Image (cartoon, rainbow, N blue to C red; front, side):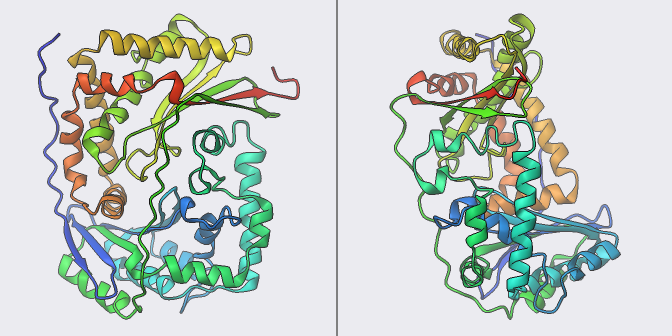
Length: 437
């Protein structure tokens, strides 16, 4: 065993200032006067897992509705104000949150705050907007899932194999039947319950004076009525005790693929969770990784190998339960079970032989470097701080994550690998159809 030397990480010291308004809105400010740019992000504690049964896709539909006009703005005015100021904007729906953001010149900071406050106060929920955005979401599903090879693989197709409850297993993009059945009163109720100030985190990063930002936040958000907020329910499920398998056919896929998924420990407890994040990189990231070396370079049985934690590939932005996923696209003349057997052999070898400190240090150094690149733009800082605050109540993890990753040991990674057994996993096999294979 090699002597463990600490991974050299940058000592991050981004200033983090926080406040909470009387209506419950949490505010996180990360001032940085080095460049005249600001990012404003609002994270609402509502995602795909929050959708009511029979209304799959509702959280994503609502993300679209939030751009259709608000208390004082018409349908396209949010876009025109931001883009007219030289900025960009977007939103996205995840398993446990929906977020919205703007990046603008810092002299437009108050504008971004006003825009976000205006739609938090009230959005234009009309029957016309609802029907229009149902059609838009349906078209997005056609483009991104139905008419794209591997469109739902594995992120939409593995949860119902791995999980049992509706919250954890349903299609977060939504079924056309559920989307078309959505009513205006349901949308109004959804907004009232989840888009309350007390269910949101506002993060502002960049060239700002924190005192001025807080004054603007109080001015624009402070008079939004506070509403009672229900804490998210526990989504935890019993662990699997036997392997589950499912096969899907893809009429557009040119070659087969297979995905394997296991449940990780609770992401809220980083000491037990981060070894799985490192393990995914050890197994699949780079030519020297275990599965890339085995399946791509030695066996030549696969065309691509990926490993990640979380169905959307973001390990630190979801609550328990969260899956550890391995995804392999392989040659048509190679059986899925051959690929799975090779994966099992490499995991067993890692557990039996362990791995060197140097391998872990090299992997962590690469992860930290990537993380630092993500934080370099102000938007990266705003979004990471917002999700850390929303999920764990500690935006300061933004600064602490490199050291936490560097503290992961080779023994912890091997112990994590030992939990990836054959009797506690889900296996999803994708087979081409329509003459491709």
